[in-house]
Length: 400
Image (cartoon, rainbow, N blue to C red; front, side, top):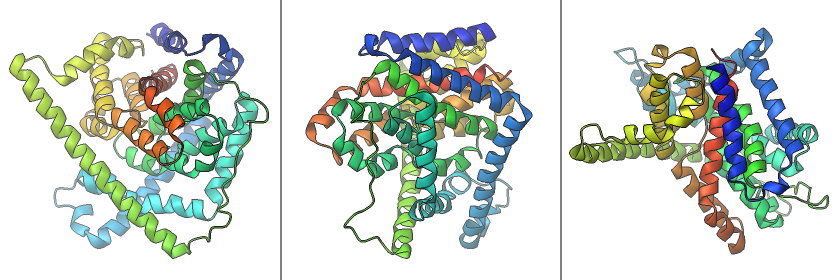
């Protein structure tokens, strides 16, 4: 199974080369360095006591944040946090903590702490991997802020860079998570795999875009445009904080609405398909399509088909739907299955994210850049899928 897992990683790279827009311009040295860095990260985090301690510490920090958020929730809704049955519902346990975690990260941004961390980690990553400075910076930015937030913060850079590089950023945006949601994810899936997936996604987003859409830039173009709000009066702190809390509230409602709608729509499609044949369900159809890729992650046929169904469900709906489906049965899976499944679903790569990214670009850049991005929706989706597969495959090499 390990050899199949290794073969799977090579196949995923091969798919990237096969669909590359400019195969002759692929920077193989850069791809090799990035791949070696990702293998080292996965090996270090999953195989060494200190690596596991780092993961455990990070996971514990996010769990602590969630527990702090429950104090605020309990003040308003004590019966929700301490229900008679002993089990909090999804809305309370997974969504309401966002009302605390998102403003906390926004405070770190307002005070300059988070931008400072992002800037210097991005510079170090660019130095190690020989990637363009802004692409490396943006990869780290996505890890903390999420896709639309990172694009909004980087609006000045997007306006100045050429359309090809904007498309690269759009493709990378399919593969992020928001740091504010990591604590929420750890309440539903194994925390150690959630934390491992985050840096792997960052590096794999750079690898996949290097394969699918290599862009050569001159030294003059390789700069980071800074946005210091010059000429714009900075919002007072409590006005900023109020906007952040309202934004977090909207995010809670948006996620809740999406989960309800997508679960109901998926059930509706299933009921219609069952009218044609009892075995014809959306999960089975998607499972058949995704099965070869799931098998290449080093699973036996039974678990590979289950994983394929979850993979398809995640792409059509979102990661929350899958996490809700599996959180109570994760212990029935093999450790390898738990690892690759968790890493695969830890990203925003799905159909609805495409609409979010395109909508964000429409408000930030000119029509020519928008048209190029809109014409490459397929590449955006392929990028997100390949990054998730690469991350799951690389992590899976060290989880047995």
